[in-house]
Image (tube, rainbow, N blue to C red):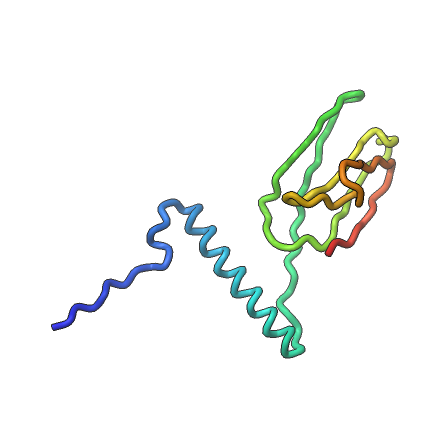
Length: 125
């Protein structure tokens, strides 16, 4: 009599819950991407875009400085960047935005933006 192979979960070899969640997340993301490509090909509306906010807020004492580099826990495509300088910054706060190895804002590498009481919105592709 033939013995049937034992059924295994596709992520059984992954040891920690983080590895399993990452595996499942990547599978779901791949399915969503493939589905969106098929829907676009057929001229149908794609799945909704999920909006996430990454807050990089820092509170500083007067005349203090900080260089803050924070990794985003999010993956995917950046479509819009909203930056805000509250009233009173008086161009004392310099800001640049990057993602991975890509410099996004301002357009010139190793340059920074400093404003006062402004909230510019930039579309990114």
